[in-house]
Image (tube, rainbow, N blue to C red; front, top):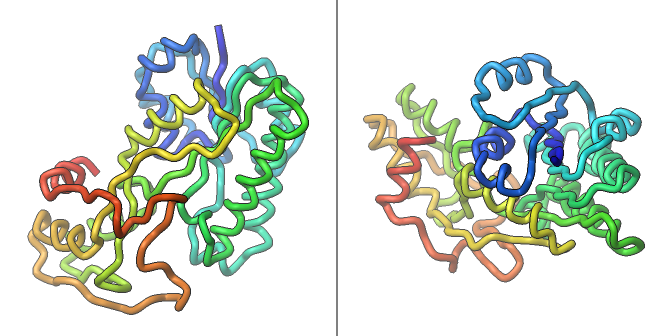
Amino acid sequence: MSTLVLVGGTGSLSKAVLSHQKILKENGITRIRVISRCEIKQADLEQNYSGEIELQCFLGDIRNKERMEFALNNSQYVIHMAALKQIERFELDVEEGYETNIFGTKNVAKAALKNNLQSSIFVSTDKAFQPINSYGVSKLAASHLWLWFNSFQKKVKFGVCSYGNVWGSRGSVIERWREMAEEERPLPITDERMTRFFITKSDAAEFVLKSLFNNTSSMMIPNMKSIEMVKVAELINKKYGSTAGIKIIGLRDPREKIHEDLGSMNSNTAPRFTEEELNWMIDRA
């Protein structure tokens, strides 16, 4: 009998994790504890949850060290997903962003250590590789901090999962483009050459869970496919019958990457999603 704690557990990834009941049960999970800040999202999660594994929801902020220690008490596993991640807003309030993404992550890691968990996963992002903005810097620092906890002890495993954009996640460009296409508004693209890594919510959740139960105490990256963003925009317009087209708006930041990196992978040279795969993903976003 084991308890898995999902920190920041009312987002898209967490819901996808909860849907993988088979993997969870095969690895002995009998209770899932969700910790997040929003009681409304927790109520919605509880109302729509249909899994067999017991679900508990608790309010808590990762900035609160004592609350994190309480949240992880008598648990064996944790997936830390909580973060401030709206890049434009982050740049307007960097201090607050760092308080959550870096120092909040430290609180979760120390709580995992104090409670002697078996395995702890921090969910990072491709924006942490050679970061160009404060959000990316915060995720890079948090990743290094999380892995550092392996350096002086071996009982609790600290691993980091890093991947590209999650297709159709809340607040994502795909979600915004769908809304704009329905409203017959042109879809903004910064550069027509731009490529990005994408992964479905289900695949991301499966990768994170497999990493949790086979934690290598290191940075773990899945094999990913990439997308030409112009092609995605064209397919979304076609799907929603929009004739507004595409608008090239130029780079918001001269440092903005045309192609993303994930260590040894680059979104310009990575395998591409086929049009059939993209259409399937758009239908289910």
